[in-house]
Length: 252
Image (cartoon, rainbow, N blue to C red; front, side):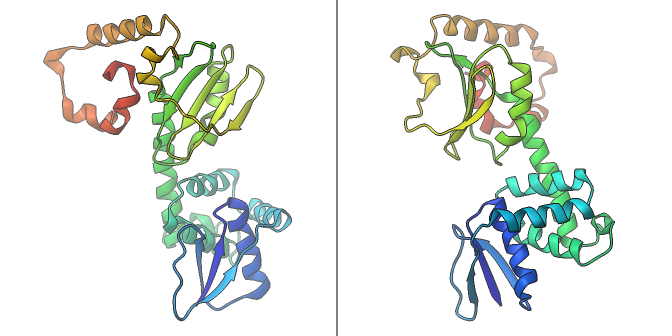
């Protein structure tokens, strides 16, 4: 068994596909370096990310599958699942080794796995669109910390840029230690050394003076629209899982 170990990037994964067709080992296991555990009978091969090789594989996929499936591939990569890495690698081999239309064969385990993961990542993307709550800071930037299950910030960037085009904002992924910053012109990726627990920071003067009033108004709105007689907690938890509650103003 040959083990391709890459740096965890999409470019590295696609470079691995390119290297497979260069060397054609009999059996390949693909793993990111952060999840690699050495085995006794495995041949270790380090994959060095190469933009040119990755682009050749990506463009090759573009010729064989539809844009919708290429987007599914990308979203499945954003799941960051160790098992999905192998499925993405095997999917590439399956597509390149078969005529056009092979991605419609849901009997293939990697086709099915990517299709399922695409739905999961989409669900998380829509939840982030619905559950992100901004708070205005004293310097006029609207800040929202999040902890999504998958790395969905690249998928929601345009949505928030178009929706809040007239205000600067930051959406920060606390789990992956990076965020998106919109400066009224463009969205860029940022990393902060100090990430404040902003919902507890009103006493430290990090929030705008009116933010507490906005929070009270938002909470009163939800209370006024609630109908206790029709309360269905089980259904509510299905749509708004508890893990999101700590960032929802109406749940404070």
